[in-house]
Amino acid sequence: MTLKKLLGKVHLILGLISGLVVFIVSITGCIYAFEHEIQELIQPYRFVKEVKGEILPPSEIKQIALEATDGMKVQRIYYETPQNASMALHYADDAPYFYLTFIDQYTGEVLKVKNLRTDFFTVVLYLHISLLLPYGEKIVGISTLIFLVLLISGMVLWWPKNTKKKALKQKFKIKWNARWRRQNYDIHSVLGFYATWILIFTVITGLIWSYSWFEKGVYYVLSGGKALVEQRELLSNADFTFDSTSTNVDKAWYKVLQEDESILGSVVYVPQKSEDIIKIYTSPEHGKYGKLDWRYFDQHTLDEFKVDDYRGRYKDATLTDKIIRLNYDIHTGGILGLAGKFIMFFASLISSSLPITGFLLWRGRKKKKTKQSKQEVGELV
Image (tube, rainbow, N blue to C red):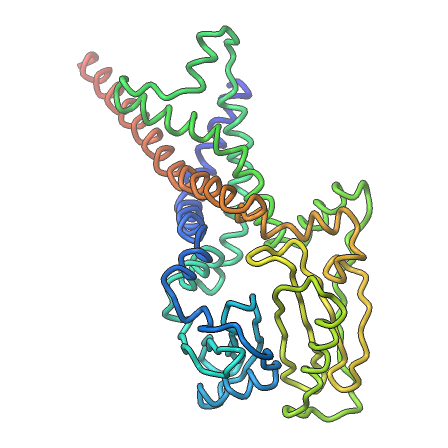
């Protein structure tokens, strides 16, 4: 058995093992590609009626959200743009709720209370990252790792032996006038070849989230041999008692806004316990996450924590840190704006077709072998 034939068998076995998960992750990624644009298009409550007056601080948004949901804990508060409504995210480890309250940050009007457990795009997202299963994230992580091997092995299998112009030309186009089996083969190999150049970035960025060892490895390569500084746990001063009515969150938020005029949107993590810190991240861009600025404060003393990992201040980030910060934007195609999302949409669509066309290839060859075996037996009889 030649090395290429062995690689073909490995490609087939791994494809059969991971096919269903790859299909689900790919098709949900395809659906989720324009989640931001679609929701803003069809959900008017995401926008305020009039941009006028001072923005309500986090403590007031939190109080309005608590009253609107009969006291559901507020974990985060989102301020996206001056035109977008602020949002309060409700969930708790010990309570079965997951809600988002949309509030006009100028008037305090509650625009919408949404149950995220029944929200279409939230369900699609969790299908994408966990298959809605208890150990789904591990299954998705393993399948993504397998898919990386499939992409590389598929490229090797596609690579033509014959380098003549006519033979090479056939490798780059689908023969639509051929029989369906040949069409299926071309769709799998040709479209797979084109999509691989995009999917390889999608898979790598996905694996960075799935495995810390992979993230460390990518950082090591990109930085030229430097180790990734792991995020250390930050805790507020234990000598103080937790006060849920404290306005220190507002003070920290105002401090952050006053120090940077380029800020367009911000997200505030609201402390739930005495040891929790105030965590705030800001961005000068709407819908992109590469230039996030992370700030951390003691909720009692407002002392700011200095961090050494790549999730700190953007101005302090190294080139490698800035590349790693682009992980989400690369994964979704958002790094290239709307055009990038279209590219990622079609790449994900092709990706979802690969397990189907691959299965049909295997099924067709199996039937062909069975038919040949029956003919041989008939001839012997």
